[in-house]
Image (cartoon, rainbow, N blue to C red):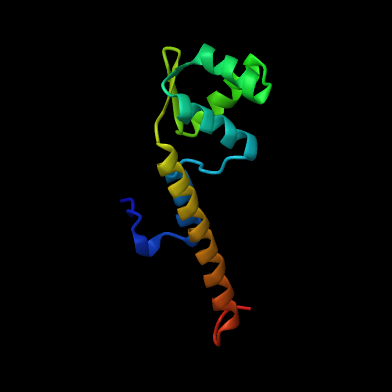
Length: 123
């Protein structure tokens, strides 16, 4: 009989892996952020119009626009349904989640540092 995984018997590295799988990737580079802002500002927008907009605003070729759009759709931020691009999460939700991730990461680092430097901690 197989043992179910519960909070108490999951290894820390498995917990970290599970967290990463559950969350869409929320980090964007500078150029990806500019692209995402264009979509949020003009959504819903036809993908052809988006390509023209990116050519004017970002000096991108059509193929670059579609490649970056595909990546952001794969991350769960946008969708391209029948040639119409729209957001799956709002700009506010995205940046709030990004802020939460930064705080979570900082707290993890702080906890590791404290556990190493307090009496009885690992060194």
